[in-house]
Image (cartoon, rainbow, N blue to C red; front, side, top):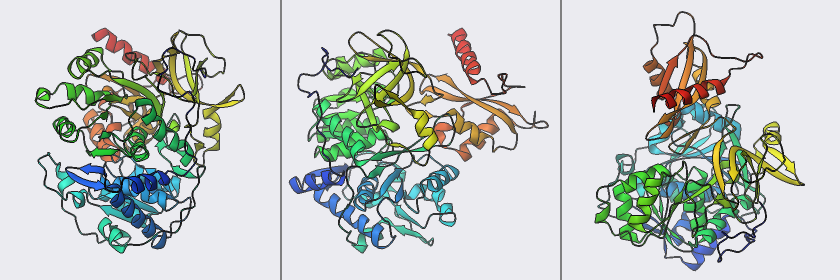
Length: 556
């Protein structure tokens, strides 16, 4: 699939994409020099220009170097929701020649401990409402936590609905090792000259898999730069206004609403949480031209009975992924707004997209086509032989955005890649087929993964956490159908002797809420006497998953 002589290829798009061979921070220096007064961030009607943004990133970088002793290549945790501070800290960490480790704000203390210990981070940025979860790590490995209150950037009056956690007043920071964001900026420290190059590490998002514990995906400035550039070229979104509501800890939101926006000198209208009324009002007020939304957000947006009250004529692009877009919703989007929903495909290991639908010729419920310089193939699962169109196999990808490997995991890295025709291909673990025009269509997963409203849930990780419950002897996690989330998490559990009748399914759910991120929590718990096992004694999760599918089929 490396051949781009295909009828779908946009006539405006080059066959080969030239990408800057610089560090990511250089993109900010360019945009700030060219457009110092242009709003980069609009946060509930408060505008932050490129000059101010760059100056604040330099203060963060100087403080990291001079006060915390952060050196080139050190990892720094970033644990916040979408906010000016997330974006500033991200580029401040880069400016300090360090590596950003973005963390899902839904994660709890024990999950955070793994990110800290595995990455070796000694410094973290955390939002005020999340601080109680990460505070215990000050006694367990972290030297410093910078605590940010989102309300610091509510500088202008607004009629937009501001969530309580955003408008909460700044709380005093008293713990040893904790410092307020405002004090970091007030210190006015200046960073040393930047030394990072294209091949130095820049960002390390974590992803899980069949082995349970999350693994750090090592991305350099070069691998991250690729999609920061590619997205704007593919959608012709240079210098536009984007609505940023996808979480920036995740590679999709990070690339299109942070790195890509800076490269393209765009303006980002920022919402920490999805709010369909606020989104529509922002489109009208600021002339938003592009929205990157997961499927569930589009469904909610189009279902808004007040949608007709807003002027949405500025919109030129709505795209995303997370789950297949229902045909009825895609049709409503096209009929009411004149826009075709553009789906794409990617993963943390590829720093967002490897595939996307051509803007002028998308296909429904389709992953799209390989982007610039991406060689994507469908091969026999576990093998390397490419399959012909129409046959189902595993997607493997070779491209400039593919990660270097997993942090400190040489065996997992070796398993994740295959050498095909002299090129290093990433095994995605996703099953798909290709049509005669080169469009990829998702079929199933080779790896165990649950897609709950766009959040990836790795069963082995949830199972590992459940084993900490005193009553659980064995557990197996499978996907169950959910009308709103698409899929949800189901736990099939064998209780230890003596606990039957003493522990309820709801108690397991409640315990899970206290010990893991909400999107990982089993919504359904089923107690059984035994779990099916192979001759080697391994739990046969596939048979439980098939039984769940059969059960659902019988109900429909």
